[in-house]
Length: 212
Length: 212
Picture 1 (cartoon, rainbow over the protein chains, first blue to last red):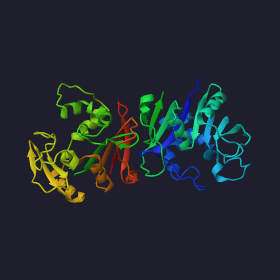
Picture 2 (cartoon, rainbow over the protein chains, first blue to last red):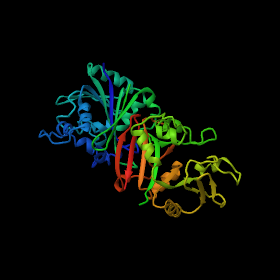
Picture 3 (spheres, helix red, strand yellow):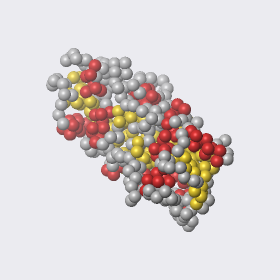
Picture 4 (spheres, helix red, strand yellow):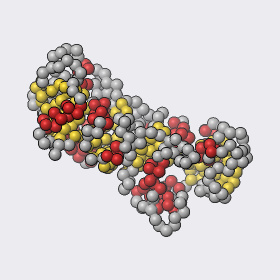
């Protein structure tokens, strides 16, 4: 049974990384928010290609491993494809020739319609439809596996606010940022529709999981 | 060595209980925010006078017990004395004839000066001075024990923002309120001056402690 999943990394005061720029494409505080996560063995291997066994193991790494398990398709906002950084209609995004997805990826965009784009084992489909309709398509493409709403933050929280997300995993770093994208707005009462569990990792990051 | 302590109970989205009224003197969401805490054996005994051994034990109860340990004086905002609920200049607050403090309590108020008030084992002193000056007086009155900034929330966070607090304990209930008093504003970078530790209690509440 397909589940719809979101993973967020936020600060104690409820901010995800904001203010994207060419120098900081993931946002200005992304490094600090993600430090514990990117330091795991799983992320070192899966994202940074370090197969020497470097990186932390333990609770944090278990969440990192779970992030990659059982996903059959992904939905991204336009920014995560890299649309904001080029006006070139043939721009192939910022993920390079071998994007790390390896599955169908649905990109939400209001730009002019464009054909699907296959790079390596990843095929990007560009959609300007309602998120419910795009999700239905992604569920079918996932072929029984899960659909991950991969970001950015405003895309991910839009799916949560719309009641479309079954599993929301929020990694709360033990820092107070005071700036960024507010993730909790519009989510009051989420504990009434989802079961909440919390766990503190070795890094001090608290992993809060909402499941329905 | 006297330490200055603050304890807050907040939601995942960083709200403490807001909107005080005569019906909800501690604020509209206070009950939900405090449920795990008030359910502890320590709180049942110390606050509600239940000496039958009722209430939870464990991690939550350890924090509740620590709350009462080693405090020599307390600072409260005017609202916590109950000033907002009466115009009577002789109003003795809402704590009754035997307030639960049993120590000197300094009440921050801009109302007309009034003499100190002793009720049972508690003496209330009313001050309109700068918080640094009131704190100095409270430290002296604590006589080597700690000073607790007992609330309300805006009073407590004012002391934290001013850099006057050594130990900030934040109990984060696993609920998303979407309303109340925002506690993290103005506290960006608190992890740079204080050591942060986190622990999840049986109730699902995450206890985050900042210590310097």
